[in-house]
Length: 331
Image 1 (tube, rainbow, N blue to C red):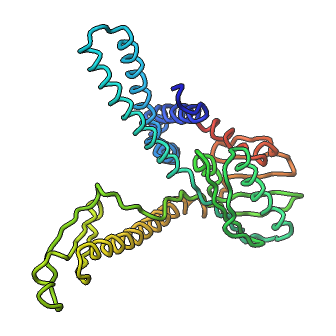
Image 2 (cartoon, rainbow, N blue to C red; image 1 turned 90 degrees about the horizontal axis):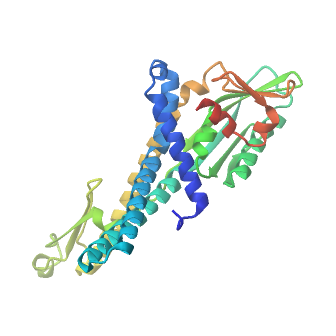
Image 3 (cartoon, rainbow, N blue to C red; image 1 turned 90 degrees about the vertical axis):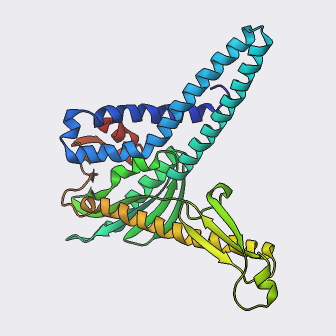
């Protein structure tokens, strides 16, 4: 894949490697018998499955292209040359289509919202400083991954931001739950939520709509009843439809119908996105209200503990944003 950005290819190979490893784990007796671990791995598997499978298809097409081009260089019969050229054109089109789809999948899955909120505990000294620990960790993670970070809200006891970067959800989801910070024998507890964000608007695709012309009805004189100036547009995937007949010309009704349909679709998908966020919150509810913290930042002992695996790390590594070292141990 010499014609592709090598960093892009490396990222896809890493996703494929993780996908294959997760596939093995999900089919192992040990993981299938542990419902908590199975659901955890399944969540990560679903996150990257579409990208990984499309990359596998892309590699098959790339191999076919190379083989056809080699045969074409050695072929002397004009009739066969023509056939191979047609195959190469078709495969090239398929390749470009897959690349576009992969990039779109990455774009759609790489924006996450991280929300941090203090939990009331018996002491409060140092809580502001401890919240800064988590804010700095997120900032350092974004810098490590060359991802963008956009602060949405911050107070003395809470913080939320959006982070845009490949695999951000897979890494940051490790923080979901209660995060305990121990500093000078004093503790603070923060709930951390990590949510996948999706596109807010839907752009009309001509392949997804059906347009009908019909005679207008109602008041307005003979013109309304005799001409097919009314327009009905149906959005096939959702079944949403609009009918415009108030304008005298078909063109004006069509323009208004498109505008109204776009507004209805934006409203439909925004509600769908809100429902998706609600579903995500329900899935992490148990982790947020668990009495066992997911992560423990122990400055007194200079260590970080990820309680799901009971493994310990040098706290400075985690604070620098190197969350992938936890991911590697899990997988």
